[in-house]
Image (cartoon, rainbow, N blue to C red):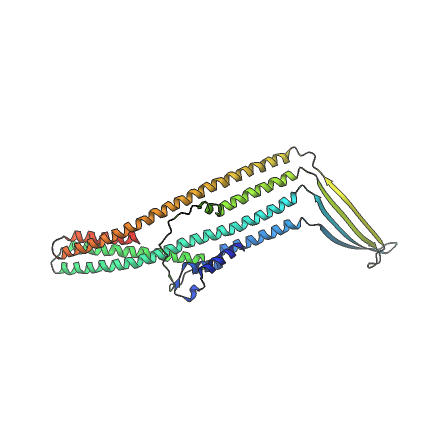
Length: 394
């Protein structure tokens, strides 16, 4: 329920209300909505949370008195024929258990919180994997378009060299070199197309489908990134699902310790019953009732409870260390990710400059070659350099 509320809020904020089935373009926000509704793994997580909620309710019900109603009827034949009917109402209530039942209720509540965190983590994992597939699909779609444009440029160069070769103005190897450059790009287009199909198929699988409609195109993802790391970035760590689950593990270990510690105390239970018996069935003639206190205390168990308590204490200490380790790992992960993104974004202007230089070099070498002031290898190298600069920037 919590996850569905969070995702619903995200959709409202994003104002994403257009169904991708009604438009030829599929945006990432639209894909997420379908993913949340259709993914089988997310549906399984939802039912796991539902089961955990029922387990919590069961634990809470144990704190209430237990009341039961009984009825019986016997028929006897012999020297005398008799019918006996009885009705009874019995109840029991735990007066003192040193907080054991309260600890069990807390443990069930903690388990429910952990299951909800598992549901959120599952959504994050599925969403992240789907986003990577979406990025791949968007990237290879753009790459196919770019390589197609590059192929057209190289094809014109190939045809020009073919004309010069057939006119006896250029050696055959020059024409073959231009042809090989075009063929190399053809192979890249085939590979990029295959990767595009794989990514689109993966996107469909996350939705429980065999394939994504070929008529649906993917929106390009934005490339602008805010490189400013907030001063309170550690709040991201405290909100991390793994860290939150580690905190729940600490709480769970503490409640298990409380349950075992409560077993050292006596258990006091109040029990009572009342009933009617006799004949005929609807007007029994005898009534009875009883009430009493039950006290139980374990006097000797070869220190098994003491060892179990020490085991719970060790598990609690281990859970605290696991939480601390996760905090350190996530803090370092944020800093490392920020540095990686910053480094990559700082290289973007360099890639743009390299592309501009490569384009200028190609234009210059082409003019010099056509004027007879440069050899074909200089022009060919300029072609390859421009192709590399275009793919690097993409």
